[in-house]
Image (cartoon, helix red, strand yellow):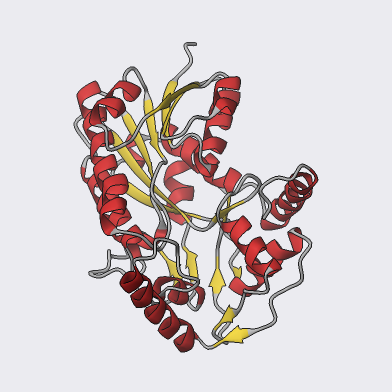
Length: 338
């Protein structure tokens, strides 16, 4: 059997890199398109190409001859000029869609986010019928929502499109969520936001990779044109999640609390101040982060289980053990554990 060929945009990132390694292990021919150089991808046999998603010609060339495009690359974060997010997340996705259509690529799996339907309120058992909100608190969810809508609307005429919404992806190799929690924990900067017990369902990275592979091979009649929430199916208090990540890094739990309205007000003040001062670094608190930390986020995963044949196979307990081992190893080698 001829190996299937996949393009992974953002193959040098956390989720993209984990997906690339899984596909290589499964016998796929893998091409990556990313802005940086990643020798570690070349070392495992990836056709690693350097390019910008906003460059339509580069995207077209990278997608040529592929059976599946996994569009993982995005500009994430909660701060920065809207134009930067639009260029990466909306224009980049439009270029991916154009390439898939022009080259007759049969399947596109798009990495989205639950933030596309976050309206500032609790999300408890939310399913995919939830509407997109009319306003967003920052550019990231706004542009990711526009990208997801374009991807789902493109389904048909020989192209099957699927959007996955993994929530709070964590695990070994994470360069964002885990290092940020570890760094701020060491500095004594972490606070619990609000006094309510808000449940969240985060996503261990291998489970997210499994979902991408499942979406690439599932029945198009079942999954085409659909978005799916992805998580560990183990909601737990957000304070517990943070404390467990801290414990994996050998740090004590968070003990101090700030009221949710105070955190939101602080975020609004800091956002205004940073804009006035023209600062490009991210404020310690924003309105979006304050709301995210003080509301529930867990989802009904039955659609992904039904249509994709997917189940989260790595539990939170096992994932935390793997994370702790990775952090210890990183610390011994001076790695990016914070």
